[in-house]
Image (tube, rainbow, N blue to C red; front, side, top):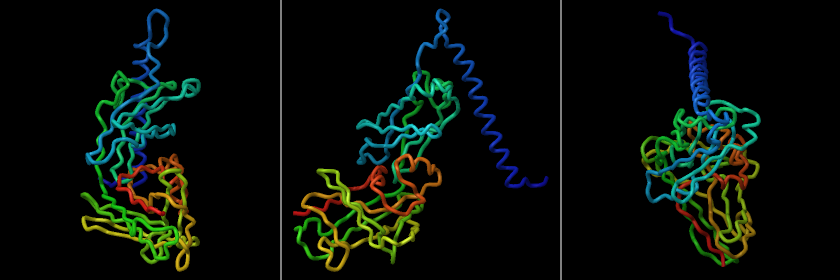
Length: 299
Protein backbone atom coordinates (compact mmCIF):
# COMPACT_ATOMS: atom_id res chain seq x y z
CA UNK A 1 0.00 0.00 0.00
CA UNK A 2 1.39 3.40 -0.97
CA UNK A 3 2.19 5.77 1.86
CA UNK A 4 0.02 8.88 2.11
CA UNK A 5 1.71 12.24 1.75
CA UNK A 6 1.96 14.67 4.69
CA UNK A 7 -0.63 16.88 3.01
CA UNK A 8 -3.04 13.95 2.70
CA UNK A 9 -2.55 12.98 6.34
CA UNK A 10 -3.07 16.59 7.45
CA UNK A 11 -6.23 16.81 5.34
CA UNK A 12 -7.55 13.58 6.84
CA UNK A 13 -6.91 14.85 10.39
CA UNK A 14 -8.55 18.18 9.62
CA UNK A 15 -11.53 16.38 8.07
CA UNK A 16 -11.82 14.16 11.16
CA UNK A 17 -11.73 17.16 13.49
CA UNK A 18 -14.39 18.95 11.43
CA UNK A 19 -16.61 15.86 11.34
CA UNK A 20 -16.20 15.33 15.07
CA UNK A 21 -17.08 18.95 15.84
CA UNK A 22 -20.08 18.76 13.52
CA UNK A 23 -21.28 15.57 15.23
CA UNK A 24 -20.99 17.17 18.67
CA UNK A 25 -22.91 20.25 17.55
CA UNK A 26 -25.60 18.08 15.94
CA UNK A 27 -26.03 16.13 19.17
CA UNK A 28 -26.01 19.41 21.08
CA UNK A 29 -28.81 20.76 18.90
CA UNK A 30 -30.95 17.77 19.83
CA UNK A 31 -30.11 18.25 23.49
CA UNK A 32 -31.12 21.90 23.34
CA UNK A 33 -34.43 20.96 21.75
CA UNK A 34 -35.07 18.32 24.42
CA UNK A 35 -34.38 20.73 27.30
CA UNK A 36 -36.85 23.36 26.11
CA UNK A 37 -39.79 24.03 28.39
CA UNK A 38 -43.06 22.61 26.93
CA UNK A 39 -44.99 25.52 28.44
CA UNK A 40 -43.19 28.67 27.29
CA UNK A 41 -40.65 27.27 24.80
CA UNK A 42 -37.75 28.89 26.67
CA UNK A 43 -34.56 27.17 27.72
CA UNK A 44 -34.69 26.50 31.44
CA UNK A 45 -31.15 27.61 32.23
CA UNK A 46 -29.04 30.32 30.66
CA UNK A 47 -25.96 28.08 30.66
CA UNK A 48 -23.56 30.97 30.23
CA UNK A 49 -21.09 29.92 32.96
CA UNK A 50 -18.54 27.14 33.17
CA UNK A 51 -16.91 26.23 36.50
CA UNK A 52 -14.26 23.87 37.79
CA UNK A 53 -11.25 23.32 40.01
CA UNK A 54 -7.52 23.35 39.25
CA UNK A 55 -4.99 21.41 41.35
CA UNK A 56 -1.19 21.71 41.25
CA UNK A 57 0.87 18.60 41.95
CA UNK A 58 3.38 20.60 44.01
CA UNK A 59 1.35 21.24 47.15
CA UNK A 60 3.69 24.04 48.21
CA UNK A 61 2.59 26.14 45.23
CA UNK A 62 -0.47 28.34 45.60
CA UNK A 63 -3.59 27.45 43.64
CA UNK A 64 -4.65 31.06 43.17
CA UNK A 65 -3.71 32.78 39.92
CA UNK A 66 -3.82 29.91 37.43
CA UNK A 67 -4.76 31.40 34.06
CA UNK A 68 -7.90 29.96 32.44
CA UNK A 69 -8.40 30.88 28.77
CA UNK A 70 -11.04 29.89 26.22
CA UNK A 71 -9.43 29.61 22.79
CA UNK A 72 -11.29 31.06 19.82
CA UNK A 73 -13.45 33.35 21.95
CA UNK A 74 -10.46 34.85 23.82
CA UNK A 75 -12.24 34.83 27.18
CA UNK A 76 -10.27 34.37 30.37
CA UNK A 77 -10.35 34.27 34.14
CA UNK A 78 -8.11 33.29 37.08
CA UNK A 79 -8.47 30.69 39.81
CA UNK A 80 -9.12 31.76 43.41
CA UNK A 81 -7.24 30.66 46.55
CA UNK A 82 -9.04 27.31 46.51
CA UNK A 83 -8.20 26.70 42.86
CA UNK A 84 -11.79 27.33 41.79
CA UNK A 85 -12.76 29.29 38.68
CA UNK A 86 -15.89 30.40 36.86
CA UNK A 87 -15.90 31.56 33.25
CA UNK A 88 -18.91 33.45 31.91
CA UNK A 89 -19.90 33.97 28.28
CA UNK A 90 -20.93 37.56 27.46
CA UNK A 91 -24.52 38.04 26.30
CA UNK A 92 -23.24 39.47 23.01
CA UNK A 93 -22.29 35.94 21.92
CA UNK A 94 -25.90 34.88 22.33
CA UNK A 95 -27.07 37.74 20.14
CA UNK A 96 -24.46 36.75 17.53
CA UNK A 97 -25.53 33.07 17.80
CA UNK A 98 -21.91 31.95 18.21
CA UNK A 99 -21.49 28.16 18.04
CA UNK A 100 -18.55 25.77 18.03
CA UNK A 101 -16.35 23.35 19.94
CA UNK A 102 -13.69 25.28 21.86
CA UNK A 103 -10.67 24.35 23.96
CA UNK A 104 -10.33 25.67 27.50
CA UNK A 105 -6.68 26.05 28.56
CA UNK A 106 -5.14 26.06 32.04
CA UNK A 107 -1.74 27.72 32.26
CA UNK A 108 1.12 28.27 34.66
CA UNK A 109 4.43 28.89 32.89
CA UNK A 110 6.47 26.16 34.62
CA UNK A 111 3.65 23.60 34.70
CA UNK A 112 2.55 21.48 31.77
CA UNK A 113 -0.29 23.21 29.93
CA UNK A 114 -3.61 21.35 29.98
CA UNK A 115 -6.84 21.79 28.03
CA UNK A 116 -10.38 20.39 27.81
CA UNK A 117 -13.26 20.80 25.36
CA UNK A 118 -16.42 22.83 25.80
CA UNK A 119 -19.32 23.17 23.36
CA UNK A 120 -21.00 26.51 22.69
CA UNK A 121 -24.26 26.79 20.79
CA UNK A 122 -25.96 30.09 20.06
CA UNK A 123 -23.80 31.85 22.64
CA UNK A 124 -24.45 29.38 25.47
CA UNK A 125 -22.50 26.45 26.86
CA UNK A 126 -23.98 23.06 26.09
CA UNK A 127 -23.98 21.32 29.44
CA UNK A 128 -23.56 17.55 29.36
CA UNK A 129 -21.37 17.71 26.24
CA UNK A 130 -17.61 17.15 25.79
CA UNK A 131 -15.84 17.62 29.16
CA UNK A 132 -18.70 19.42 30.94
CA UNK A 133 -21.31 17.93 33.27
CA UNK A 134 -25.01 18.78 32.98
CA UNK A 135 -24.64 21.31 35.82
CA UNK A 136 -21.93 23.32 34.04
CA UNK A 137 -19.09 21.87 36.12
CA UNK A 138 -16.05 20.24 34.51
CA UNK A 139 -16.26 16.46 34.77
CA UNK A 140 -12.89 16.19 36.52
CA UNK A 141 -10.66 18.55 38.51
CA UNK A 142 -7.83 19.83 36.33
CA UNK A 143 -4.48 18.58 37.63
CA UNK A 144 -1.35 20.38 36.46
CA UNK A 145 2.13 18.89 36.83
CA UNK A 146 5.27 20.95 37.34
CA UNK A 147 7.80 20.54 34.53
CA UNK A 148 10.46 23.01 35.69
CA UNK A 149 11.71 24.19 39.07
CA UNK A 150 12.72 27.85 39.02
CA UNK A 151 14.84 29.35 41.80
CA UNK A 152 15.54 33.09 41.97
CA UNK A 153 18.35 34.79 43.89
CA UNK A 154 19.57 38.35 44.37
CA UNK A 155 22.87 39.00 46.17
CA UNK A 156 23.32 41.06 48.25
CA UNK A 157 19.61 41.17 49.10
CA UNK A 158 19.76 44.45 51.03
CA UNK A 159 21.81 47.56 50.14
CA UNK A 160 21.77 51.31 50.82
CA UNK A 161 20.68 53.57 47.98
CA UNK A 162 24.25 54.83 47.54
CA UNK A 163 25.68 51.30 47.25
CA UNK A 164 28.56 51.28 44.74
CA UNK A 165 29.08 47.57 44.15
CA UNK A 166 27.53 45.22 41.63
CA UNK A 167 24.38 43.29 42.54
CA UNK A 168 24.02 39.76 41.22
CA UNK A 169 20.63 38.46 40.04
CA UNK A 170 20.50 34.76 39.25
CA UNK A 171 17.92 32.23 38.07
CA UNK A 172 18.42 28.47 38.28
CA UNK A 173 16.38 26.02 36.21
CA UNK A 174 15.95 22.31 36.87
CA UNK A 175 13.60 19.99 34.99
CA UNK A 176 11.41 17.71 37.08
CA UNK A 177 11.22 14.86 34.56
CA UNK A 178 11.75 15.41 30.84
CA UNK A 179 14.04 17.99 29.25
CA UNK A 180 12.52 21.48 29.06
CA UNK A 181 13.41 24.26 26.60
CA UNK A 182 13.97 27.72 28.08
CA UNK A 183 14.33 30.78 25.83
CA UNK A 184 16.18 33.88 27.05
CA UNK A 185 15.56 36.85 24.74
CA UNK A 186 18.28 39.50 24.27
CA UNK A 187 20.87 37.26 25.91
CA UNK A 188 24.48 38.18 25.15
CA UNK A 189 27.45 36.10 26.27
CA UNK A 190 25.32 33.60 28.18
CA UNK A 191 23.85 36.25 30.48
CA UNK A 192 20.24 37.17 31.16
CA UNK A 193 18.80 39.64 28.67
CA UNK A 194 16.62 41.62 31.06
CA UNK A 195 15.43 42.07 34.62
CA UNK A 196 12.16 43.43 35.99
CA UNK A 197 12.06 45.31 39.28
CA UNK A 198 8.56 45.53 40.74
CA UNK A 199 8.06 47.73 43.79
CA UNK A 200 6.30 45.48 46.31
CA UNK A 201 4.41 48.41 47.83
CA UNK A 202 3.44 50.55 44.82
CA UNK A 203 3.53 48.04 41.94
CA UNK A 204 5.76 50.39 39.93
CA UNK A 205 7.88 48.48 37.41
CA UNK A 206 11.42 49.21 36.23
CA UNK A 207 13.15 47.23 33.48
CA UNK A 208 16.91 46.81 33.12
CA UNK A 209 18.18 45.65 29.71
CA UNK A 210 21.95 45.09 29.44
CA UNK A 211 22.04 45.44 25.64
CA UNK A 212 19.02 47.38 24.35
CA UNK A 213 20.02 46.85 20.72
CA UNK A 214 20.48 43.08 20.99
CA UNK A 215 18.25 40.96 18.73
CA UNK A 216 19.51 37.67 20.09
CA UNK A 217 17.93 34.84 22.03
CA UNK A 218 19.55 31.94 23.84
CA UNK A 219 17.85 28.55 23.80
CA UNK A 220 18.69 26.26 26.72
CA UNK A 221 17.82 22.58 27.01
CA UNK A 222 17.36 22.08 30.74
CA UNK A 223 17.54 18.60 32.23
CA UNK A 224 17.94 17.12 35.70
CA UNK A 225 21.16 19.06 36.31
CA UNK A 226 20.55 22.63 37.54
CA UNK A 227 21.31 25.29 34.93
CA UNK A 228 21.84 28.93 35.95
CA UNK A 229 21.94 32.30 34.23
CA UNK A 230 22.80 35.62 35.82
CA UNK A 231 22.91 39.35 35.31
CA UNK A 232 24.84 41.99 37.27
CA UNK A 233 23.43 45.46 37.77
CA UNK A 234 24.41 48.54 39.75
CA UNK A 235 22.38 51.29 41.38
CA UNK A 236 24.71 54.26 40.74
CA UNK A 237 25.80 53.38 37.21
CA UNK A 238 29.54 53.86 37.74
CA UNK A 239 30.43 50.60 35.99
CA UNK A 240 27.08 49.25 34.80
CA UNK A 241 23.74 50.68 33.74
CA UNK A 242 22.17 53.06 36.21
CA UNK A 243 18.89 52.13 37.90
CA UNK A 244 16.86 54.92 39.45
CA UNK A 245 15.37 52.85 42.25
CA UNK A 246 14.08 54.72 45.28
CA UNK A 247 14.23 53.11 48.74
CA UNK A 248 11.82 50.20 49.08
CA UNK A 249 11.40 46.48 48.51
CA UNK A 250 11.61 45.22 44.92
CA UNK A 251 10.73 41.86 43.43
CA UNK A 252 13.50 40.95 40.98
CA UNK A 253 12.18 38.89 38.05
CA UNK A 254 14.39 37.64 35.17
CA UNK A 255 13.10 37.74 31.58
CA UNK A 256 12.69 34.28 30.02
CA UNK A 257 10.12 32.01 28.40
CA UNK A 258 9.44 28.31 28.92
CA UNK A 259 8.61 26.64 25.62
CA UNK A 260 5.64 24.29 25.42
CA UNK A 261 4.54 22.97 22.03
CA UNK A 262 0.93 22.64 23.19
CA UNK A 263 0.75 26.30 24.24
CA UNK A 264 -1.12 28.49 21.71
CA UNK A 265 0.68 31.70 20.85
CA UNK A 266 -2.67 33.48 21.13
CA UNK A 267 -2.79 32.60 24.84
CA UNK A 268 0.39 34.56 25.53
CA UNK A 269 -0.91 37.41 23.40
CA UNK A 270 -4.07 37.47 25.51
CA UNK A 271 -1.79 38.21 28.47
CA UNK A 272 -0.27 41.12 26.57
CA UNK A 273 2.97 39.37 25.62
CA UNK A 274 3.97 38.71 22.01
CA UNK A 275 6.52 35.85 22.03
CA UNK A 276 7.82 36.99 18.65
CA UNK A 277 8.77 40.38 20.13
CA UNK A 278 12.09 40.29 21.95
CA UNK A 279 11.51 43.52 23.86
CA UNK A 280 10.53 43.02 27.53
CA UNK A 281 7.32 44.84 28.44
CA UNK A 282 5.54 45.23 31.82
CA UNK A 283 2.77 42.86 30.65
CA UNK A 284 5.32 40.05 30.96
CA UNK A 285 4.68 40.02 34.70
CA UNK A 286 1.10 38.85 34.06
CA UNK A 287 2.46 35.44 33.02
CA UNK A 288 1.85 33.13 35.99
CA UNK A 289 4.98 31.44 37.35
CA UNK A 290 5.53 29.36 40.47
CA UNK A 291 8.91 30.31 41.92
CA UNK A 292 10.30 31.83 45.10
CA UNK A 293 10.42 35.62 45.39
CA UNK A 294 13.81 37.31 45.09
CA UNK A 295 13.50 40.56 47.06
CA UNK A 296 15.97 43.43 46.83
CA UNK A 297 15.70 45.87 49.72
CA UNK A 298 17.02 49.38 49.13
CA UNK A 299 17.26 51.66 52.17
